[in-house]
Length: 198
Image 1 (cartoon, one colour):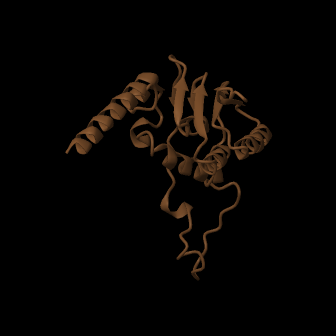
Image 2: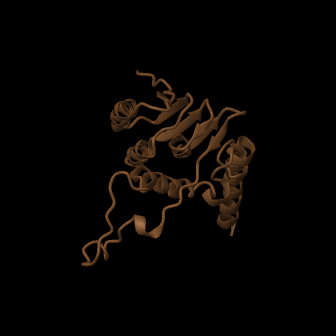
Image 3: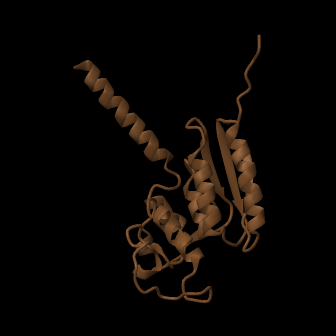
């Protein structure tokens, strides 16, 4: 007779650098391979100062979104987070953060003429010349998209450009929501029992 060992979460370390795009590309490949094995849980330990580039954070998001629905993601921030690191941390089904850590993301404003709408892309007319030294930065477009995703968890308009502490994250139910989860589970059990009794 075989006994099944209780398997804990698979550990995956993601160091945060202020440089190192090649590091993130390699780590994303390894994360994708790990998730393809459909583990029950994966814990992403985030440590270090710096910022994950917006493009890498969005790529990590696409990899996590494509995982098996049976795989739980735990994100553990052992350092303060900024920019793309915040997004990766928010993508966890369960989030852990050091008590004195903070999160930060900057504000990005893109003007209307910086992106092309599909209906306008092929119109005839006078084109405005822009070179690589113009004010438009493609990375700002990725950062703006990243902020849209962060806005699903936190109000970006109100919090961008400010240091956000754990107490605020707790108010939004992003950390230590075990008590809330237990309360909701208990409440749903009671309401189901009441329906069955009728």
